[in-house]
Image (cartoon, rainbow, N blue to C red; front, side):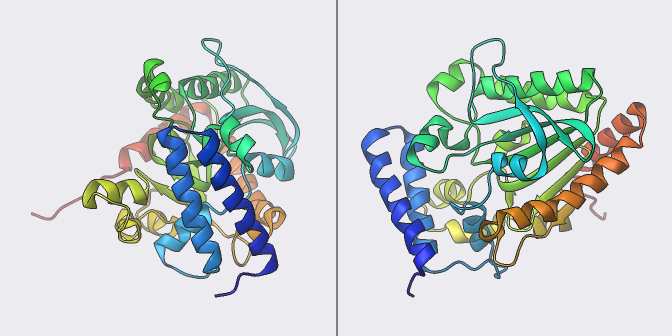
Length: 318
């Protein structure tokens, strides 16, 4: 099927990035990103439309190279954003950003994953895959927000936590586990928005909240379809089937009561109109914060803990 002019430009840019990454990056993560980019090129050539209920198409839309990233949503939705850096232990992680900002007349903390557009930014942001210092920075900022009674908004978009040797040596698993232990204790409202990829513990480490919402074409899963296919079938050939079995779409997760709300996107997907996508998200955030701000800290914690206890609970008939 012919590719339109704008899509052709995107395809050409992706092909250029694939070539550059092949030259400058030799890690397993970079090679996996190259394969993901090749899948995106194939999808663009086939004109993914955003009107299908096929889970694999939702995966491709969630990864679309023109889809708005966290900094785009911050630009459209927030004012006076001041970014903070460092975990006060090791260093700065550009894959996970956070800072104070103004939203709907109040000061909030916004934290989120950040991917890169071009090759240089992809490498700088580590393809949106945080290291331990990123998760420790996020928790530091969230605890600071709780100390000063500021609501927290987290924006989720990552393939997963970085699995490199350095990250493991610095305690990747411990950093994620510690966030999961400490974030539920914070006595302020937490609103979570999965707007792209919600990949495994890399997403969950900052995705514990009082209201969890997903954009219409976002995905959220314990593992990527490609990795699931590699484990079960020993290759990527069954990634479409894996996407179906994982129940990773917003619609499936809402039905399973793992998320609280699905936020609509512009016709065809958020990548076609990022500003409109942000404006569709705005009232959902305003409503969630309004409801949660009305609760006392004790009520907030009790409600949050009851929600967490209900996750993945199944009743079987005897």
